Length: 144
Image (cartoon, rainbow, N blue to C red; front, top):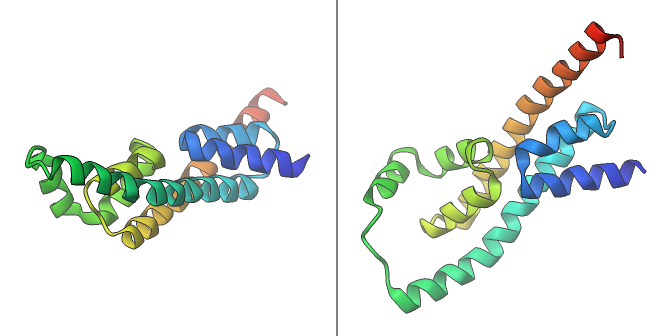
């Protein structure tokens, strides 16, 4: 039963990172297992999208060429680099969209994977600690 809960949280993290942590705590996983499952699910999601996204990007660019629109996006990337995207995307837009954005910008896959994994791990730790403290406070105040 424990493995099913762990895999459920990891699968949910691959789809919607922020929802996986409260779900893990609500399912009865301890905070450390919830943290591991969320970070692993988000990182695995990044790997899958990187693998599929590079092929798709090559096809699109081969058919249409590179457009010059979206200069603001390129300037934001030039300012913050893959580290900025990797650290902010898991919290703001989620790992699937953040990885797809990185692939569409033509980021190096290795750098994108490393920074997305670091970002997912960091935010997983922060959100797990916050949610676990919130659940503990509810138990304390309402004697659950």
